[in-house]
Length: 99
Image 1 (cartoon, rainbow, N blue to C red):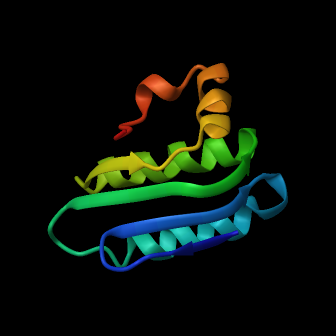
Image 2 (tube, helix red, strand yellow):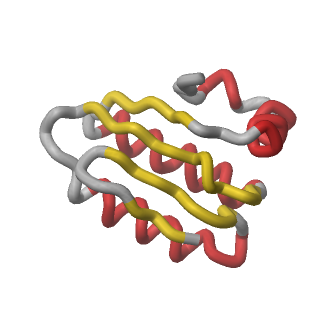
């Protein structure tokens, strides 16, 4: 799992699963501290290959942190497989997804 990107573009790669949830959380929080003042963030999930409940919880927590700091965000690049998992979890309606 990697978190990369520049300025207000966050790119998540790999698996968002229990085994790396703490590492991913730290990387996302670190990225939150580096966001610029334009308050618009794009989160690219096109390289996420697997997600479980820990990964979903991590994304929700990150989105709540963005909301708390008054950042607007949009999510793009979700694969059909990840979209199906988020749909099954019943939370897709809460995410700001750009298609």
